[in-house]
View (tube, rainbow, N blue to C red):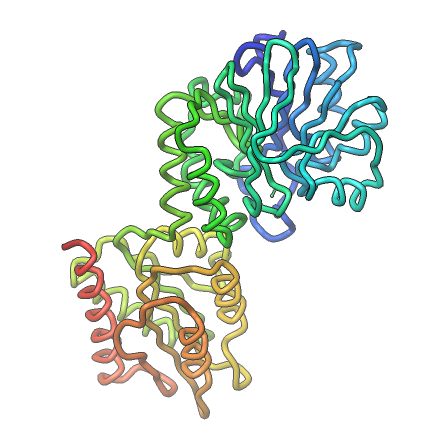
Length: 400
Ligand code: FEO
């Protein structure tokens, strides 16, 4: 039984799968579910790394008891306090009242604030250690990856890194949990979507964490979501996080439009067709009213070019576009080549509002914005093609 849960040595997987929730954080779609990963270290002293969403506590407790029976858990290590991981703290404390909670100075206010849990605590600073017997754990504080209290835990003897949200992805686990034993195809796209939706604002903290961990030998990354990463995949997941966290996009353009009756949509079509004619292979077009922003954001993180446009609505931006631009702003996106377009019936506002967004952004403005009254004319086609042409030319300068 224990072999089924073993990650390495005395480290076991005791996480759970959630295939019921529709929206992670009540925001982001979960078509493939999500896993809440927790790990149990069965040493002379027993340590639990993070917990799971409280809805799954009973199955979580059963998994723990299958490994340690009636032995107590000595330490609960809290790498991250977001309730998808901390949700079972109160019940763990109820079942194991003598447990010592391990966290940093930022952790314990949240433990008390969310769960009213006090009692034995072991407060760690960066580089502090905890002896379990055969294993010694070290702690790396990684604030803002993804909350201020975030930290990582490292087991030197097994070279296992418990990384919290970092290197995680959406997608429940189909039976196995180690990458080498499962088909991991779907998790790569889900990693980009997870990063861009959840961690995307915190590029600098992620970069700092990567720098802090560079040189640390790692044979397994035990993230809080998705598979345990081993072998060549370790370098692959680290390079994905390194690339996304410095907002480094591949060659390609995301075109996002908001249109009520199809006229503004034709502006987007003309732009996309010209981009393709100019040799841009990755042209991703999203109807902002149909594609969930979760997927649009993932594509914006993937590609260097971004062109957005919408109709005017009640003398404002089209609402779905306004919501998307707010989500882009909230992620401190950088290093994007940006173009825009818009339309109106009797009084223009969309282009003016997108210009305000562009002014505040850290994007490089490309081409002349296009504004259309009511419907496409020959002049509008030419203007859209000129905007697309300017974007295609700009992208070429990154590939020289
Ligand atoms: Fe998976 Fe930031 O929680």
